[in-house]
Length: 105
Image (cartoon, rainbow, N blue to C red; front, side, top):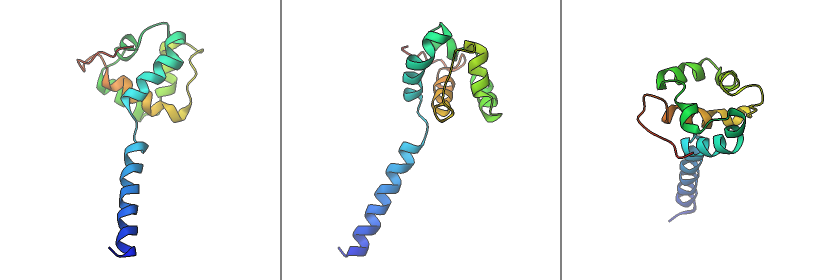
């Protein structure tokens, strides 16, 4: 293989890895909920996610109100960084009241 081909393959592999790690993850959101929000919310993850349907969670997130909704459900003690909200949203969406899925936390 030529140096150019090796470089192109390395760049392609790098891009593939970056796109998978840049996306939000429901499993990571579940861990973040258990670590950061379970105590302030005083409920388990299943109860939190079941507060809304998948469509309602999507509307809340698309409007940019996910952080405000977390505080509305859990109270003002619930602090979550803006960079972690996409993971919490994926968790809430994955285990919403109309999804049929039940989290383990």
